[in-house]
Image (cartoon, rainbow, N blue to C red; front, side, top):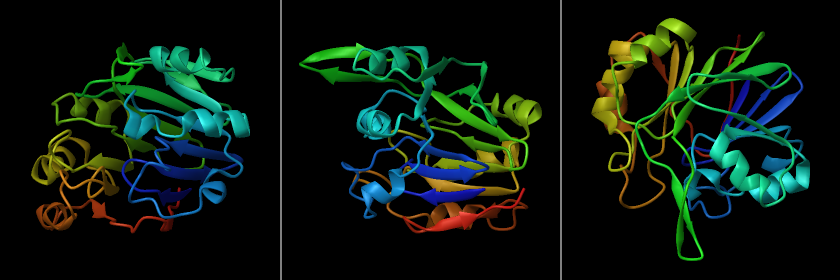
Amino acid sequence: MKLTWLGHSAFRIEFGSSVVLIDPFLKGNPSFTGDFATVTKGVTHILLTHGHDDHMGDTLEIAKATGAQLIANYEVCMFYAEQGIKNINPGNTGGEVSAGEFSVVFTPALHSAGVVRDGKSIYLGNPNGLILKHAHSPVLYHMGDTDIFSDLALIAELHAPEVVLIPIGDRFTMGPRTASIALRRYLRPAVALPIHYATFDMLVQDASTFVADMAGSETKILVPKVGDVLDLPA
């Protein structure tokens, strides 16, 4: 599994014959400095954790250009279907959907979801975390935007995520200290990466507190720079 952090909560993930973008907030993302055409080339699937603009990002443009399948909750899929995306694969909290050679599980997340268009608020369903399962790759859990909640223990029991992408930015999600408790007490993955920080001034600006709080843990903390490619073994 090759994992590329694109800034904020956006990732490009490659395994088998699949190229997956999660929360592709690129053109409006001040921390993304890569080449848009390069990181969207060959995309087969777009996964969205929830309906906020800093996560939906460039979904419409990418999906129309590549024909990539959109996997998101029902409301988000219908929102994009009305705008011309035909290759949709909707799910919702607790469900698992097949995406060809991998599957996606929708988990709870404590957050909100919706956008404003033409001065009107549009509700876009419940936010989610997403778990990716592929036979020859580690189980990956993108937590989306969320606070800590004790049912993370059930997620760990049911799905045993080995790689966790966890928000630490505070204000709109949990902060570094809470994120470290979520990992230590409930999830205990082999590897974790902090996300959703340093993008905007109002968020936590670096991962140093989180890394310090995780010192001595059995979980390996990776703090890539935007654009770094990580090769994670099965």
